[in-house]
Length: 372
Image (cartoon, rainbow, N blue to C red; front, side, top):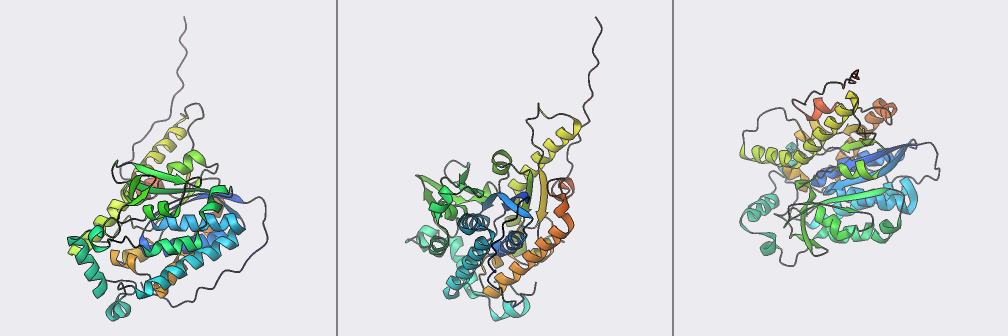
C-alpha cells in the first residue's frame, strides 16, 4: 500500500446540533498504528450530522480512539472529538520521531508502511525474544502515557452522559476479561488495554495486573448489547479475517498467528450473535428478553493484507495519514451504501463474513392443543 502524502487538515468546528439523528454503537479493534484507519472512520462518521454515537467499546488502539472520542464528545460534541483525535495521532507521531523504530530507505521505497528492514525494529524484535520488559525497561517508561494525559481528561469522562464508554483489558493472573466504563476509566486502564506483554510491563489498576485486551476481547460486543439502547453496532476491523494465500515464510506465519489470535474472541461473539438472531427469526424470543443486534462492518482487508505486523509499530506521519484517508473513504462508502440500513437491518452477512458452518434453526411450530 503506497503511503500518500496527503496533508490532514484540522477539522473545522461546527455549531449545529440537528435532532432526529440515527444512533449507532462503535466497536473498535486494536492494531497499533493501524488504529489510524479507525481514526479516519470515526472522523468521517463524526462529520455526518445524521448519526449520533450511543456507545463505544475499544481495545488497545481502539481503546485509545474510544477514550479520545468520548472525551471530545463530552467536552464539545463531534467537532471537538474530531479535533482531539487529530491532536492525539499527531502527538503520537511527533513523539515517535526520536524512536529507533523508523522505516528504512528500502521500506520507504518498496514497502511503504512496513518496518520489515528497519534496523531498530529488528533489534527490538530480537531483544524481546530474549529479555522481558522488566529487564529491557526497568523504569517502565511508556511514551503513550504522556500523550494520553495531555489529550484525555478522565474527570470529564467520569461525569459525562454524552456517550457510553467501555475499555477492554485482559487480567494477567485470573485470565478474565475486564471492561472499564466511563465511571472508572483512567489513563492507566487505557494503557492496560494496549499493553503488549513483550514490550511493556503489566499495567496495575486497582491492585490487579493487565495485558492487552485483544487476548480476551477485540473488541467485546456484550457491553454494547447490555448497556446501550441502540441495536446497531459498527465494527471497525483492523485485523484481516481472510488472507489471499497460505503463509510460507517465518515472518508471514507469525503475522497470521497474530491476526488469528486477535480475531478469535470477535469470531466467537459473532457466532453467538448469529445464533440469537436465528432464534428470534425462528419465533423464539424468550418472552421478549432476547435483543436482535444489527451488525455493520468497515474494514480495510485488501489494504491491511499488504502490511506486515511490523507496520503496527510505524508511527510515521505520512503512514498514519494514509491510513486515516483510507478510513475516511471506507466510512464514506459505508454511509453511501448502508445508511438506510442503520436502525433497520444488518448490512453485514454474519455467516458469510465471520462463520463457517453456522447451525441451522428451524422455525418454531405452535403445538396443537389436545382434546380431553
